[in-house]
Amino acid sequence: ARGRSDAMRTWSALALVLALVAHATGDAAADTPARRAEAFFQSSSSSPAGGSNHTSNWAVLVDASRYWFNYRHIANTLSLYRTVKRLGIPDSNIILMLADDVSCSPRNSFPASVFGNANHRANLYGDNIEVDYRGYEVTPENLLRVLTDRHAPGTPRSKRLLTDAGSNVFLYITGHGGDEFMKFQDQTEIMSKDIADALEQMREKRRYNEVLFIAETCQAATLAARFYSPGVLAIGSSEKGENSYSHHLDRSIGLSVIDRFTYWTLEFMESVTPHGAATLAQWFSQLTNHRLHSTARPQTSLFPRGAHDARVTDFLGHVSKAAPMAGGGYEGLSSSRRGRVSESADAGDDDAVTRGGDGRGDGGGGGAAAK
Image (cartoon, rainbow, N blue to C red; front, side, top):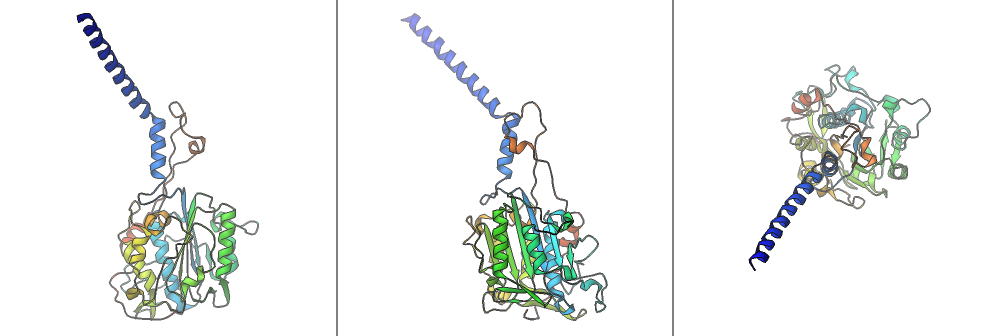
């Protein structure tokens, strides 16, 4: 009996040693460089709130209005341009379209400057700006060419939207519009169906992962009425039958300098950081009827994960990608991920400009000029 007891104790000790060895081996295997890299890619490819498997962010920002009295539309566009740059999207991933150059207008009392607030705390034009389409280049045809990548031969890369199936696209357009249309240059129009068909071409050509579409004009929501492609979240500054309004007047310029939708958007963006977890739903909740004097309601029927599960920086921020160097210990990485190149966006001097107010601040809440 004593011999059997000693044998049992010996086998138990041996089993314990084997279990400890197996556990240690498992931990070591789980902590290989390949597994750590794989875990990094999995964690960086999904947002904390929901899950977006995008690999790049792009922005198309369009001011469709010409003439000095439409100053605020240029300020709207430049304000969002400064914001997306502050949050990390580089100029190489931004298509900026300005139908007029009010900074050089003889009526401008502040040459080479555009302000979005009467306090003039931030010059939205500044030195670090890259306009890709200006003046009469800003047309419905060119916007559709940008979206579908159907350009004339010789078109430079700076004028092209070089997206792929992993790209999230922020498409913003401001100007004068009406029921399912937006005017360009006060001469031509783009229809909701035109944009809808362009987005469908983008989907068929695998040119986007998700799209955030924002229109700031009268009856803005109707510009997304004909959309039918999946993965598109749209919001307008007003609904059918409603006007969109300016926020306040700058007496030294003699015009309203920013619209209400953009003003309150910038107010919210002040608290958003490149690595923050603020969601689109939190952003949209700030755009109340009391503040806008119109109704801004997101259209989420084509956007499966919803505004609550999408971060602001899923569209307006940077995307960092990294890959380990080829070599021993990384054989476990999938081939599609070995080729990824590290990249990060540098917001540069725009951080200081935007923290200075993104072109708005305490400038009151007066005027109500309808688009």
